[in-house]
Structure formats: structure tokens, C-alpha cells
Length: 280
Image (cartoon, rainbow, N blue to C red; front, side, top):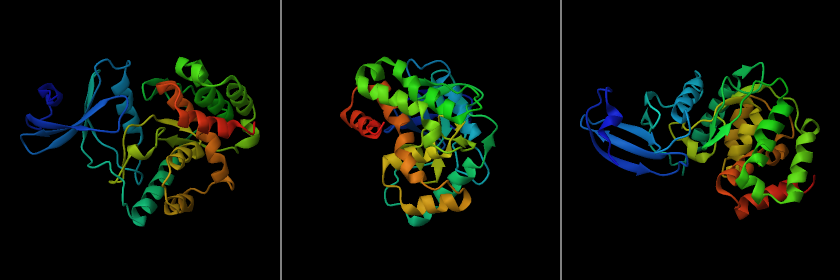
């Protein structure tokens, strides 16, 4: 699907080839090579939700924090496609302990950027579903309403979640203040699973907002295979309240609910939600 108009006005040469890249859900993603020997990443969607790529570009720009992760430069943004600088492979296999220590330190620096309230200056997207980010003074209320309970109104999630688990989720949301300690409203990538962390080390595909740092860590931890070196380096620069490891499964409920909302009933997500909510 090589499209010459992708590179109009960028002085990068004519597109001569492209490869399909795997890993994204909201977009079709390509690495396009040009007649001048350059390569860029192009994300496209035939019928995107309104503002999908403008909001993604905004999130990338928000993550440009000195000392934190590299993020791709936004070369061109339209309603139907986004052109970014190419930061290389997305494969994290066989990364060294030094990589993970560096990544932990960079994420800690990102999380040192804080706001007075939770949320963001605008709503954006997590996948293709709206992510609501109203400025909220109370972090527990923000997470309960806009990161947990909001998925109960999405048909895929509402239809898949058993009634007893829905009741437990509502009960958990009402008790968050007893379960999760106060945390600053830190700058979060918002969708930080392995596929959005590159070996550069760099971040892609954000769903940015200001929220609990432990919520960000819960997503990485929930994906598995994050070595202790990462968390040790993170805590050296950004100490966490003791017991944080035990709280991560609760915070990772947001991701499981988001999976249901996008894909409908999946045995893995339903089982993890049920097991996490069982004590409540």
C-alpha cells in the first residue's frame, strides 16, 4: 500500500517501498523507504475516529522530557495518516540489564513531571475508544470513574462481564481510597505495554494523561518479563510507597477492562478480572 502522498512536502525523496509492521491495533503501520535512502513510519486508518492522529501527535510531544525516553518526531499529521521518524526495531528480546536500568531511570524522570490535578487538557484515545481525561482534583475519584467504571457502559464489556464481577468492580471502585495510597498526578504514557517500548530506548503510541505512577507500572508488570533491574533503577530516582507490588494487579484491571471493551469476551481477560475481583 505504497502511497506517494504520504511524503508530500517533506523533502525526503519519493517513496519506493514499504513494509507492513505488526503490533498496532488502531492503525495499519508501515515502514516506508525513500529514493534518498531515508525511512519513516506511517500510521494509517481508512475511517479513523475524529482527531485520532492529531491527538497522538499531541501525546508524543507531551512526552518530550529531557532525560526521559526518546519519542519519534512528528513529520506530518492528517486525519487519515501520521508520519513519524523511524526509531528502528520494536523487538525487546535479549535486552541487557543496562537497557532495563536505563529504561527504569527514564520512566522515573518522566513521572517526575507532575500536574496539580489528574487528567489532561483534552480527551484522547486508548486504542480506538475515547479516553476521558477531565481535570479532577481527587485521584481516587478519577481512576474509579474514568479508568474503571467507564468501561461498564461499553457494550462489549458490559455484555461480557458477569453480574457478580460487575458488582465487585463497583464495590472495589468505592473502596479505592482504602486500597491505593495518595500519589502525585504524574505524566503517564498511558498505554505502556511491551509493544510501545522500543530498544532505542523510546516510546510510541501514547495515550497520555496525568495519573498515578503505579498505574503505569501495573501495565508493564502485567505484560510480564520486566526484570528487577528496571524497577530498582526506577525507585532510585522515583521512590514508591511500600507495598506497591501488591497493588499492581488492582490497577491493571483497567487494561483487562479495556481489552473486553475492544474485543468482547476473551477467556484470559475474564479470568484475570474475576480472580482480581474475587476478594471484593
